[in-house]
Image 1 (cartoon, helix red, strand yellow):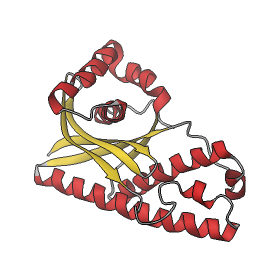
Image 2 (cartoon, rainbow, N blue to C red):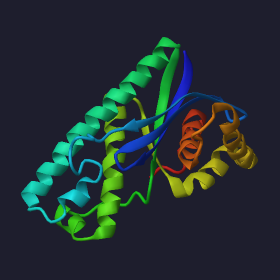
Image 3 (cartoon, rainbow, N blue to C red):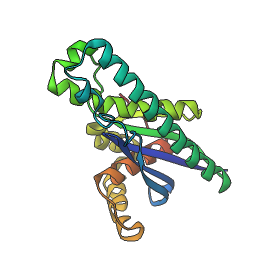
Image 4 (tube, rainbow, N blue to C red):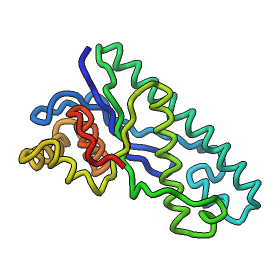
Length: 203
């Protein structure tokens, strides 16, 4: 079976996902989607920590846990569908790259809810974690890659061709069509690093 890799850049309540195969010189985008992993009918699902601010600790824990259960289920269902389609076309998911922010560990929930900046950080981790758990449930090797380190990692893996790889990815927008923003470009680059076996920007 041919190898393909998944790249995900998460946002509040959704993620930009790209599936690629091929080589740095000839990148092929097999699939790309906007995957919603927050219940649109539930108040506070897109920003669970913001919503929990001001609640009692017990209420906050319950809300975040319930949102997490739904987000993890939605992420799993979406990734499972993609993996199923890959198998039908004789591809195997060689790995999944999830783009990270700083990668720093978070303090306790009361400390998070007392800090606006930590709330934003926690929500970013919340949705990345949903995708991460989904990948693990599907027995896909998941790699976290710090976005700020992608250029350094690309140089380590692709050498002097790293810039050309970036340009090749940018040019894909002309053939695959919109949207082809930083979301898709970064996810594609991270997925290519998986295919090349590079993990030098691992968090």
